[in-house]
Image (tube, rainbow, N blue to C red; front, side, top):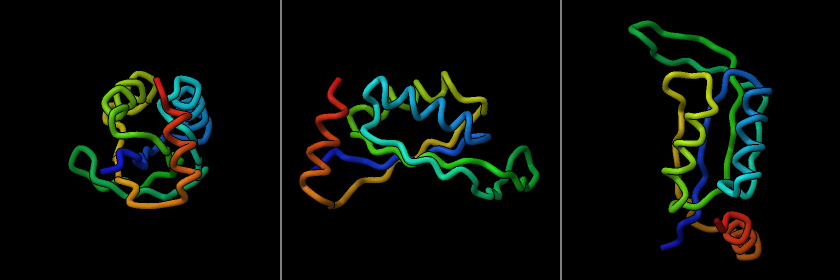
Length: 106
C-alpha cells in the first residue's frame, strides 16, 4: 500500500497558512503545499456554531511523517485545536508521486 497522503489544515488567515506551509516544505514534511486563501468555515466550537473566514492548506506528504507533521503544525498554529486531517492518495502520476517521495525524505 502506498503511503502518500493529502493533509488538510485550516489556518486563521493566509499569512499564518503561508508561514506553516513554508516550514513544512523547508523541513521536508511536505513536498508541496497549496494555499486556498479564503474559505468560509462553519463549525461547532464551545457549544456555539461559528462562521469564520479561514485559509486552507492542501499538503502533499507521506503517512510515516504524519505524527511529526501534526506536532510541527501544533507548534506553529494559533488555534488551540487546529484541524489536521489526512487522506490517502489512491492514485496519480507515477512521476509526481516519485517526486513527492523524494521531496519528503528525512
